[in-house]
Image (cartoon, rainbow over the protein chains, first blue to last red):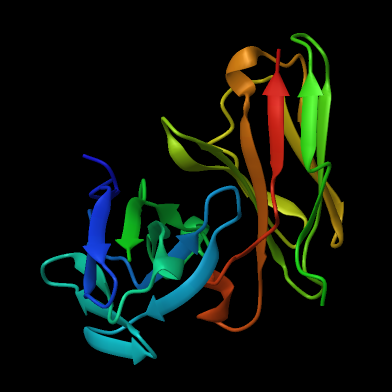
Amino acid sequence: QKEVEQNSGPLSVPEGAIASLNCTYSDRGSQSFFWYRQYSGKSPELIMSIYSNGDKEDGRFTAQLNKASQYVSLLIRDSQPSDSATYLCAVNPNAGGTSYGKLTFGQGTILTVHP
Amino acid sequence: DAGVIQSPRHEVTEMGQEVTLRCKPISGHDYLFWYRQTMMRGLELLIYFNNNVPIDDSGMPEDRFSAKMPNASFSTLKIQPSEPRDSAVYFCASSGGGHWAKNIQYFGAGTRLSVL
């Protein structure tokens, strides 16, 4: 079982719709969770971080965390063609020890928003 | 700040040659990470440093790969000898700050390596 799993997609949604991206992780002790966006040919850039159970909203983006079920999701409201990219879920395995600062990335979900 | 700076942006070399990739982290960051990204394997952590000291090199594929961080503003990833299967995009990232900020990594533009 991979440490961080995502559906590779591609996920295709029409412009204006809600895009829902999901991620599960295996280490129950994980403390920090991140969503990175990567445009084709570019480097990953951080768009959301979440540390506590529940929802965290930032503009059109909402991150959801459920530690009991070991999943984290990203919702993109009013999707735009400019949101078309690969979305990477990243997890910090635990808060200390040799994993401090280390992130494990999922394979990424390709999102396409069509006009 | 200019962000994480990597060089070269593109590297084409022949099998058996030595390749050196360079990275300058964001000033003040005390963590530096080297990743490799391929279509098949995604984004893989190769090695990371804290305060210039290697902390975890378990992702380094084999002895042909080595990484150094001689000071807080410079790191290298060397492949010697290079092989076609090393072709990938190599990213450097850095992080730093308080407890939670240490987990927020900022990526360089990457080096696209092609080994013929």
